[in-house]
Image (cartoon, each protein chain N blue to C red):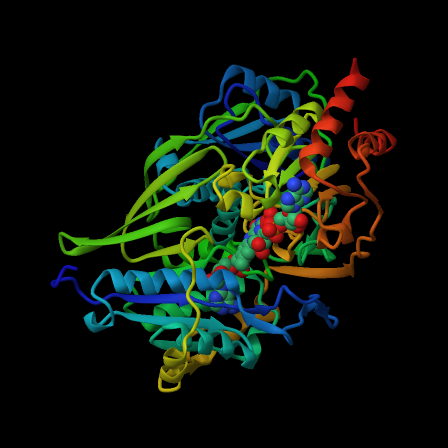
Length: 274
Length: 314
Ligand SMILES: Cc1cc2nc3c(=O)[nH]c(=O)nc-3n(C[C@H](O)[C@H](O)[C@H](O)COP(=O)(O)OP(=O)(O)OC[C@H]3O[C@@H](n4cnc5c(N)ncnc54)[C@H](O)[C@@H]3O)c2cc1C
Ligand SMILES: Nc1ncnc2c1ncn2[C@@H]1O[C@H](COP(=O)(O)O)[C@@H](O)[C@H]1O
């Protein structure tokens, strides 16, 4: 631990998403996601864990670091923030406004960028690699573009060091054919993969402590966003039509009696796959 | 006819299969043009011409490659404006989606990812919620920016044509992280998971030895994939992982061996045309979505199948 390092302000973006353990649905004429069985996106737990580990690596809670869990969404979305506070975030922010309904990736990015600007002194924005509902991974890259911050996406490791009066980050990224080392100064925006750590669970102490932590509820007016820029009105894409795909039905199941490999090849030949 | 700009990253000596698919699609939607990062060799120039590409846009400054995503996105946006593109098409890799994302902000244009079809009005067909819905979506603002999954279009054969004209595009370097180290992974010699028509995937049941899966994949000309349990165990590179946090594949044939079929695994493979599952446990959830399931031990079933395929071929 370096005694002279300044306090870090980390914003972790956490999304309230339909639980993937249940069937998921699109509702109504505007085909928006049904959020009745929703939870903190499990992929955002890796971002929160990364934030908490950075705090621990640089002097812990006593060093004045602050982890702010930020969500955007309807009334229920606050649960993603509450869970984050139980796990260890210090404070929460919930951007909620009727005009946000129906936001696409760009609208979400514009709204979240406004929240980050509103917070003011953020050193590091951490996000999950993708939301488990939209699955687009567009938001972190768009936030970087809007906030004009260096983007480090799909980090599978992340370290910070303070020297020469500034914070520097080093991350690793893996793709198909290369492993990359990436460096940047802060402020920056980083999305993390599920390879980066093993997220902790909230414990009893954390659950009790969370009750005293503050959640700021913000509207679009509070963060200076015109309602016409977000939601249905400000979306740059539109879902015209959505059809549930017929569920896959079970086919033929056989038990190996010593010839299953050959029978598999018969099946492949029938399907013209050889 | 409006230009349809295809983004191509470092083609090497020849165009990649996905590049050819995108060019084929672009030609059905308008006049194909290309935004290219990296060297334009004679061979690639000739190939582009043969796909009807009249104009290639290239960054006038070097070094965009070292800037993580931001530089390439700034270039693509500038190229789309220089070409006055009616739409922009990219592949569907993580990086391509991010380039699309940022170019979308720069151009105030909507972005749609994971397209499996694009029609003349740039309406897109895609699957959402791990393949449980098929959605039609369109871009309502700006130049449609669409990332298209591999194997969504049959690449046309190139025909004749003349090498395209090259237009340099100036790009101001945006705030970006720098790539300061790169280590290449050894190529497997097999088709890439994104492009493969056949995928043979193994899980915890493989118990450390992917040999029987590789043999079957080679006999079928397929790629090798894995569950997270197998990549976490270090039996195979992480880039082979299929599922929610790995690759999404839609091959003609998916062979699942020693994989239970957790929801996060299904998310990456349930749009495959045909699913074959081999598992010791008759109650494994993977059997619920299998077209052909074998309750059995993969260490005997797979080698027998491989041998049988080789026998039938000779
Ligand atoms: C945030 C998050 C993201 C995730 N992302 C992914 C992802 O992208 N992809 C993914 O795959 N998982 C993912 N997972 C993990 C997923 O939940 C499962 O844990 C994982 O898919 C299990 O892998 P498996 O089926 O190989 O192992 P197991 O569930 O242990 O199944 C092994 C199977 O092998 C069978 N078997 C054993 N021996 C043999 C044999 N000799 N012959 C035949 N069958 C045999 C067993 O009967 C069993 O069904 C994710 C989890 C989380 C929390
Ligand atoms: N409504 C939201 N509220 C908070 N964070 C979000 C929201 N939408 C997206 N994010 C963040 O952006 C990441 C990528 O989301 P996506 O681009 O939708 O796949 C998520 O893992 C979150 O960290």
